[in-house]
Length: 424
Image (tube, rainbow, N blue to C red; front, side, top):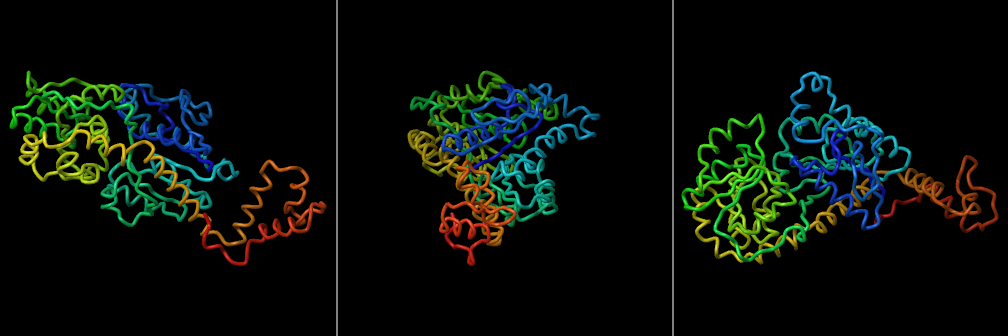
């Protein structure tokens, strides 16, 4: 397959170290994983984008290089009111569609659907796949319905994520994955609980502190604060900090294993329908069980009673802490390796893309399919003698390579009388 993919036009890939942005990390793993399997992948991003795929920048300068510049960009009314980040995205998106129309790509893959919806809705011959990383809010669903066309497909990152928009054209659920080699296993935890992520109310940091106090456990809190949620930190987190409740600030994802592997439990008292929960599988890869409220994708990530506990209240989370020793940490790591590895994630995307191309072919008439195959043959690196026999304005060429081959080429050009049912 020939695939083009993109996250953002204003942010280079890999992400700057001080930015939490899971879609970038996942996009790298997907793109590089597909290349290792023999597919052709072009990754679109601004200057500074570097990964083991083809790279297309169009000499576009990045707008941001760190978290401070992101804050400044999105706080700049002038640039935001003139849609500057969106126009940076569009500069790359239009090139992706132009090249797809020219036959350079079989399909396009975007990690933010909104950047490509308008183009996809008017370029209906180009298969487009979106990974939906966020919850599907009502306004998201309305936008998708406005720009709906039959060539657009969605990958959900959990089955629960589909709950609020079950009728979108999903092609597959592809769970996010991690590389267990980057998360060393430990069967000797220390005596502390851990919560990590963006310090925002929906992640449940306030509730995690309640659990630690109720169970008389130390709690390590890791994650960045943001200007728009600083009040939450100042009101609910900062006053509780002491020798028992410790705030370590932001730790880069590459170093989080040091804290995951020694925690006796990872806490996710989420206050929203979280569509996945990457920290849960990162902790599990290190052997650390997760105790979670039964919200969002938690029941899909955790085997209740085997790799952690999924419960219905903060009181039940506290009770689960007291029986965490019943969980075998090796089961946690095995579960991640079996279900949530990078290889499993790339498997899912490879199958999703193949399914999309199959559906796209089935939508074509036999004649359309034949012409597409004939064009591919024309563009292929074939001997001149064979190319001379391919269909052109006057039909089959006059070369003397054999009537049997000519008949095959003519059939491709005209399309079979009946569409095969076992197309792959």
